[in-house]
Length: 280
Length: 330
Image (cartoon, rainbow over all chains, first blue to last red; front, side, top):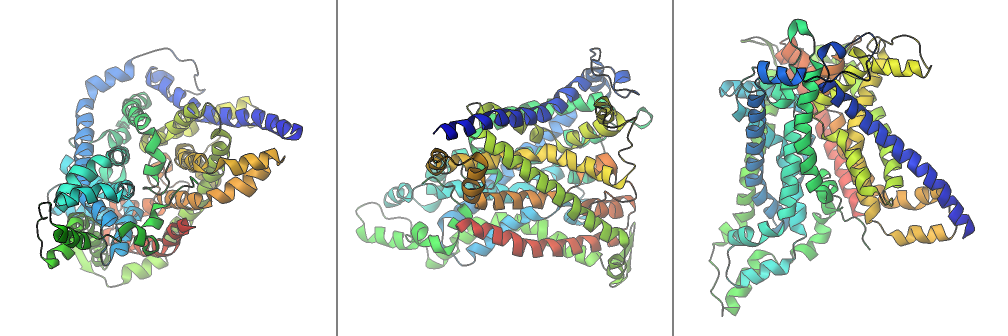
């Protein structure tokens, strides 16, 4: 017993060294980047870095006056929200079929859906670019919406499917003996019962959509369709160089709502990120 | 026992007897015979059999358009030399050229190398902090702090590290103050330093992904076995190696597989931080395709690279990934 307690004491010191150390690794760059957002441009790129800058709202003014930040934000919100709605509309029936029906090819179809998640965006980038060019959808928020929906469809389907498998069969059986049809059961029983899964899937899909970079870069070629993510890459205003303080500020504007969403679904996060494989 | 349950396993036939013995068709007939309640709407057997496919059809159609069409298009386009709007038939020329293109092989090697190192580091760090954190009373706080890097837009993270390493010289300055180096290091100047900046950015942002999953797995496993070993006087590294790690194995396999897939598509950091410098040492496959297509406008050539990468992806998906998900059964 004494030995056990001793080894535990040692590991406690080590534990807080490791945990505290990694917390600093996570937090220091973030805090420093936040300080970049609130300092004058002259103090961002200097021969020696400045750790205690003077406070300034330069970046904020630049965003308000020079960059249509409201429009980028609106583009992001419309494209992301639209893509999540498309995903849910397509994924809920698909997940229901995968979770509750026995049919030929179920395994293969399920794996095909999963495997679309493995495709590197770069592989389909060129064809998708030409596809949207032909459709006249280049440079539009609609194109982004369709792309984001496609990227996240596999993830959303698999997460919701995992939650549907947890719903006890008896619930449906009772409804079925009352004469409810399959679609009624899906709408009235399954969807409400796996609502946490649906919300988790929606939040994770939204995060991936907000973060999407390559397609947005290719499809949104002018500021008309810029989202927050790609607008960032374009704060490299010619002779001015990269406008880091504006970049920092924009990334925090996007970070805060994501952080809140993630804290709300914290309990379901591990399950969502593994597409339903690991129950938290 | 609250061992993490693997839902992929649940999709296998071996468990379908429990999950699905009462298939709807059987049920509907059974109900119709009992018949005191209003009879369910009758459907023809053909429609009943087609029903799951109808449910899946919209999602599948969407995915096919976005994967099959581009795949076929890429194969077709890869047979042409495309200069702006001019398509000239070239047969397999693009492929014979690309297979002798040192830049292509370098991009493939870089993707594998940077990805492997990055993935190994993330897995190790995530395992360590997950093991120390999961029983800690402050776990909720740690989890939110550790999550934060993952919640920044990848393009923002790339800029954080671009500024820290190159433009703002912060890392050089900090290392200088510690007396480790002198003067300013040109992080884009050497092959390995440049690769290292990409690795640091990726590890910083994505270790949380693995951490969250590992913590959930550790919290979900049977605590009593560990407790018993502890009472027997086993040291914590022993407990970790001999008990926790084997119990987590299936979770680790799935999580690392998912992360590994994403690492092979690394693009944003390369685009923002290094653009492939120096001399292509940090050019990944994704960046190679982007550069050939959208910088040099060799769309046919880029498509050939896409097709080769697609073939690789399919092979990996069919072998590694399928096996990883099956191992969840254990």
